[in-house]
Each structure stands twice: as structure tokens, then as C-alpha cells.
Image (cartoon, rainbow, N blue to C red; front, side, top):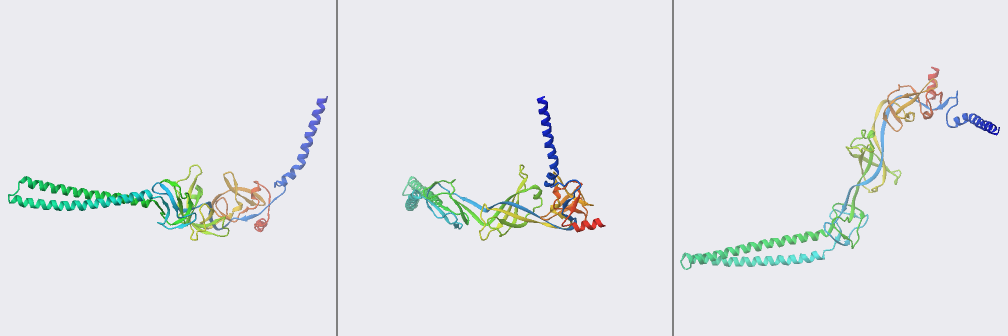
Length: 390
């Protein structure tokens, strides 16, 4: 008996809850924006008309310097002087840092001394060769007179040839010493870290006393006369871009200011993961106000198409992969699939699916369902009334 009473009470409670929900359902539908049966939804409307459609594309990305060089020394050594700091402007060929060169200076002095010795040896060999030549010529004359033997004449000739060879050896040693001195002078010159281009010091990596090698960057030089905006563009927009297309560049750090950017390079390959391609846009920066790694956006004007069938952009309704509009006729909204051409900021081109003069819902169209009764207000209301009266 108790179990039966419990079940009856439970069913009564569930029925009461259901009744309350049923009574509140129309209010909930109205609050959610769904019209009750027999009511018309108020929407704005527009007329499909012929006119121009301007197409633009907005890209966002980071700015970077067009030329960036990490300057490294050409030899190992300890930094004994730094001549530039962060933000300094430098010229091509300017010395940025100096490495220790005491040992190389000592070697240079030794090489210069060896060079002087080699020159002195050459002078000595030249004098000896001149003396041997005189003796050879005299013995040749004595042999013709029969005063000395052939052996004596041959010995003087041999001594001359040996002296000539010694002179050539001394000259070769001089060339070797000169080459060694030049090598030391090159290494001494390499202790000076030189700017390979004009620019600004973007980073400084070392201080005085740091031991560096040929793989250690000393500073980073950047050229800010021109910066680049790097952006990844989806494949559907990539086909609309052309080299030389210009646009307005803005950065959040400088509101109200605009710069001119030009599409300079478009990657021929797409990223297989994101289906995007890299696009590089150059931006003149003569006053150097733009900085590398600033977040920027560019609005590219892709041209316009004149005298095409167009509707306001807000009339477009997207349902999954379908694009369409709600066409209003006799106060009934009917969903119709369309094919879109050019897409501008305010207007879109209708390639197929509409005829000039047809009325489409604009504001409020995303809340409509196929076959809804509508009441046109605002834009398009007068035209709709004229069609009804006609």
C-alpha cells in the first residue's frame, strides 16, 4: 500500500513539473528570439541591385628588419674593447670590437726581423755571385791562353753556378718571409671586428674580457630603412594576391598612423598542415619609427568589379558548407542557396542564385528559418510594401 502511494505521489510531482514547463515554454521561446506560432519576425531587408564591389584582404603578422646580420669574429681571442652598444648606428667598415693581439704583434716583429735577415742574405749572395762571375770570366780567358787547365776552368764555372743557386734560394726565402708577414698582418687585421653593412646595433652579446671564437656572435646589425611584414595567407586568398599589390599598414603601437606596404614576395609552396603560404610585404621606414617584431596589419586593395549583382554582406547566411540568403516574398522568408563572387567589406557579389530586384533579409537573417513569416522594417521596407501593393 505504501509503495503504491509513493508511486502515485511521484507521478503527481512529475506531472506538475511538466505542466509548469509547458506553461513557461512560449516565454522561453520568445526570450530566445523564436517567434510564436502565428507571429511575424521583424527583419531588415535590402534589394539585390547592380553596382560595384570592392574587394580587400586584411593580413596580420610581425614586422622584421629586411636585413639582419650576426657579426662574428674571424679568429679566436679575448675581447679587449667594445666600440658600439645597443641601438648605436654604425657605418659599413666601422670597427665594432677589438680582440687581443699582443702575441700576434710579437710574431709580427719576429717576422719583420726575419725579413730583414733574408734581404741581407740576398745582398751577400749577390756580391758573392758577382765575385764568382769575375773569377769564372778570368779563368776562361786564362784557359784560352793555355795558362790553366780545363779542370780549373770547370771548377770556377761550378762555383759560379752554386753561387747563383744560393742567390735564388735566398730570394725564395725572402718571398717566404714576406708571405709569413702578410699572413700575420691579415690575422692582426682580423682582431678588428668590422661592420659588414650600415645599420643599427639590434643586440650586443659580449662584453670586454669575453673569450670568443669564429662561432660566437658579437653583435646583431639590423637595417631598418625598410621593414617587412610577414604573414601566412590561406590558399583561397592567395590566388587573389599579385606582386606589387599595395595596402595600408597599421600598428597597434601607433594608432591613427598608416604606412604603405607592397607585396614583394609570395611563397610558391603551401604549408601542407595549415594550407597557408608565406607572403612578405615591404614597408618603407625612412624615419625608423617602425621596429622589428611589432605586431602589424595591412589592408590590401584587391581591386573592384563594376556593375555586378550585389547584396549587403550581412545578408549572407552560412549553413555548414552552404551559402545562401533568405529571399522575402509575400512576407515569407525562403532560404535560397547562392554562389558568391567577390567579397568586399560591405558588399558581396552574387554569381548565381538571385535576380536583380529581389528582396533579401539582412539584419536578423541568421535567426530565420525556412518559411518563417516576416515583417520588413527599416531598410527595404518601402520597396517591400510597393511589391505587396503591386
